[in-house]
Amino acid sequence: MATAEFSHNHMTSMQAHIKEATPGTTIVLVHGAFVDGSGWRVVHDRLNRDGYRVVVVQNAIRSLEDDVANTRRAIAAAPGSVILVGHSYGGVVISEAGNDPKVVALVYVAAFVADAGDSVQTLTANHAPGGSKPPFLPTGDGYLLFDTSKFPQVFGQDLSPETSSFMAAALKPWAIASMAGKVTVAAWRVKPSWYVVATDDRLVHPSLQRRMAESAGARVVEVAGSHAIYMTQPEAIAMTIVQAARATAECGASQVLA
Image (tube, rainbow, N blue to C red; front, side):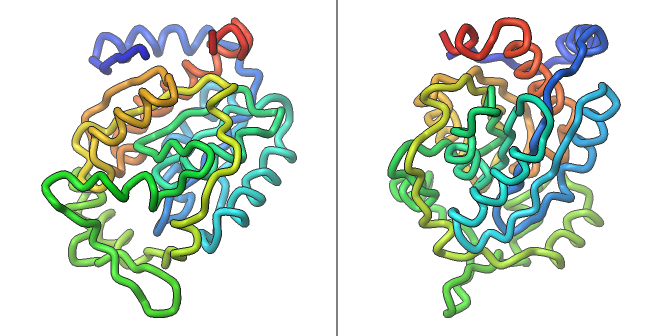
């Protein structure tokens, strides 16, 4: 498992290489729990500027099966091969949906990497550093709410106060059935994967992120940022996605995996 950190010089060098690329794939972005796909806006725009086709999936987060089916519809509609990207719970979705033959690589962003039989529940059951628990509030009818009073300091302490306040007001309930949904076949076992570790994440602990990335044999990039890293460090996220696209296009997925 290779690990890299983003520095200013590294970014400048990668930007030069990106401009030389001829994008030939569609990037499909999958959001996590409680939020929607709008958080991918800056990453979407960055990839579009480099000529990539980008699709942002909008999942209902009512069940893993529905979210996987919805993501597969996006993959089916996408021209050419697909780089599938997931943030947080979206990592479980892409672990299953990534089995589609059009998917050539997976990119996990502070995300859950699920093996067969894994769910968010199983992956987090024995990993709570310091005894901390996520600030989720059960509704009594099968859903969880994010405690809005704790959202700014837990989900995205590096977001602007205005953005954090708006996101807290627009959070979606997360179905417990979705959180408990289990992967049947893990795509990363046969396809190359990349993982962006958010080193300042207060929701999915960085040590858990590293453990999951190592289990998947992913190429790892460590970036300073909160759980909202896809919003606060979009340049690093976009360049990691491009790196995956270039590697699979130049070498072929089977060679990248080797």
